[in-house]
Length: 313
Image (cartoon, rainbow, N blue to C red; front, top):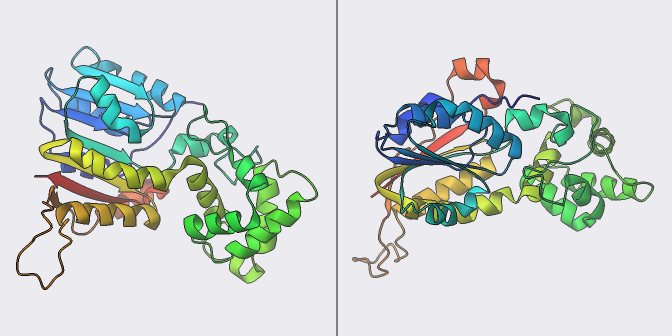
């Protein structure tokens, strides 16, 4: 299947980056190269672009998408996770960036390619690996995690109010046979949720699948440990733009941006700061930038997107 992914909040992100034509820009979630294409379009021959993604299909697609700019400027495409950005830049001899983009979550390609096992709408083997070099799959979590571990994952990462019941039903079902496919898991989830609740809030499997995917790919852990180091990589007035797709991600971004703007840990009643912690910059977006009604109508997956921007001092 051709790698297809419609970049969410594209114009807002490009504007938010304040692109300098001779600057250095990093896209930590390259995908099909949607944001990357528009960044490279605005760079001169002195500019530099570094794209990072752990998905082989994304790397291939982005390479093709950026072909028109390969002779114009220096472009590096690296297959890795964005939490390795400091090491990647060091290896490439790059000391800092004028802008960084993170477009989190699952790409349309990953969702629309059934054999990747992200979707609950097709009957396929449980997979959900963003990096297919990884050995562990969603099937391993579903069949090997204890009931308490499943409950924790589904409750914390899916914010699913029936998490305890779903975890119990999964454990009961796998006593008889290994849970192999998405439809098998769907039936178990459906049986664990009261009929009245099933009709509200979209597909009954949605939250559980989100939870398993986040756990498998360590999405929140990686995000949590990456933002500070990415802000440290920014040059003065450099910006980082992060697009999130659910409240768990957005809360992490909001909190870490705020702490980088005001890191002081002194008690509020202290007349002077004595902790010595200095602000690294400012939060550009007091409230997140949301997609327009037109964008939501055109791309329903953009509905939950939020863009937050931080500028280095």
